[in-house]
Length: 52
Image 1 (cartoon, rainbow, N blue to C red):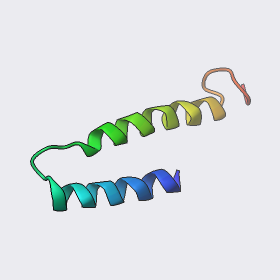
Image 2: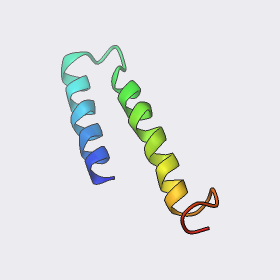
Image 3: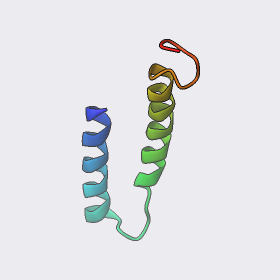
């Protein structure tokens, strides 16, 4: 989770410097964030997985 947050901060900073008119960083934000959220929900037992 910390690596995700750090990477997103770096990508947003690069976005602001390089190409502020096109929000390309959103692809990485969703592409990495969605599976991370699903994994988190699974680990918490929300899908009847490991802890459920």
